[in-house]
Image (tube, rainbow, N blue to C red; front, side, top):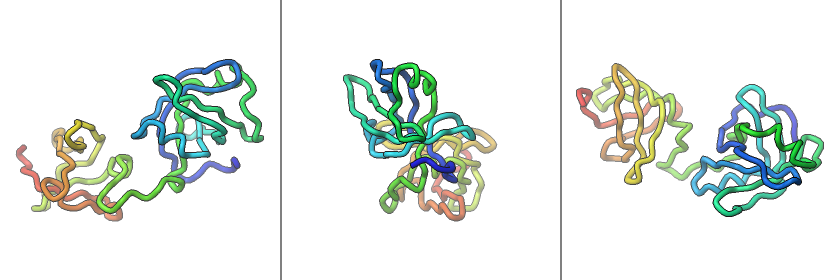
Length: 176
């Protein structure tokens, strides 16, 4: 179940509270839908460089939050509230290899952050530093000579994404 840490962790949530007295935790999920974090049976908890592996035994929506029961490296469920308190404020990560491949033309946000953004005329606009959700569409936050917000709309603004080359090509006026 738990061995050496995987080569790449992706943070999908955070332990933000305790639930009951039997070692359950409250989970704040960054996934959409929020309960999708419960699809992964192996979680890595802690901060980058200092994560420990746990197995998800059970999880569910409880009111307006998610709750989960975990097993430690020995396969034993966390015994009580005292055992769970050590996990408070820990990031919840999964191994990137355990995540499904996105559909063609779709991307995980974390795969786009760090990519270089260039116009169709080869003007370098900078790198993606973050992504934003606006309701209408996702937006690339690009930091170069200044910050630019570029809608992640295929064929209108984003003409190509090349993860291997580390670039996103956009139809965008560099003066805007």
